[in-house]
Image: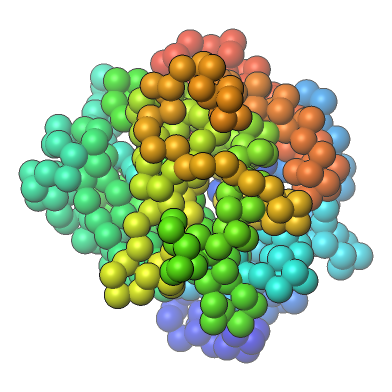
Length: 449
């Protein structure tokens, strides 16, 4: 869209405010809004933001060893192609923003800019990544006793469909009004837990869609008197919620799926196996990007279908990287890989960028993932896992950050300015939560994600 088109549409729809959104190093969606009367000026000149915001933890404090504080400013500059009118806030619009230095150069700490760099790097190698985040979330009511699930339905149950019919239909409509296509909907294992999966898109659009998805689910639920949470483990006694990352690799003109080989016994190309191996090799560090919160590691436990080991498998829901079954009507086009170790406490731009970096490294070095695992890796003996190179995940956010600090490929992809500040923020969060009790952790993650 052009500036004229955005301004005209905003005026025609009677908008009063347009939000410029970004996602910070703590995975929190933040932004500023411009009045429509100032929209053209803000499109061209951006909205000022203090650099210290990228040193803020999700508990809204500045990391103790932060590089940035009250001094220094960048601009939030909107991507006009992301403009939408918000169906749940009809006098407001929304655009995703990049972070730009005052000299008009990209800011090194911009997560969206990180993903744009990785997309460009893949394109230089003749590749395009498509992706979609498959989110699970809880619907609850806020009571004097805390958050209470909206129902006690069973996984895939008709009762769970009926009890949430109105709010789920409203969420689907609101997502559709913003250009997101819902493909499947069903109740999940936890009480009050639902899953709505959306259609894949190119990598940048997929990350933008994840921001829209998170905002929409929570906003629509609130307008139905409910609280929605996409936190990885909002209830200690219920199933965790993932944002499983489905991804595929295509040639740049999007005509050929570079993962699919119908003549291969497993349906995969050598490039697909290389990409899987790259992700598995970097996964202990990658978890600091894809499952980065303290709460994330409550979910990543053996035997819970969320993955806990660096294994891959064909239709294996305990494997970290799963090869899903293909659609009968489009076997090549539907060939994709699923990263189970992914959740909505992640910044989707950083998370997806990390996966692309790991996959490209595996492709470049022609890494081999070994044979697929056809059982729960948690039931294998230690000796068998060691023989096959299968590692247990780090068991805490701090352990994952230690792995990230040693991973030269991921650090180089991020760039030291972003990597260093990201690790400072996430370490500060983990330390702060470590000083509190479990109730504090669950309450805050429920509300923030």
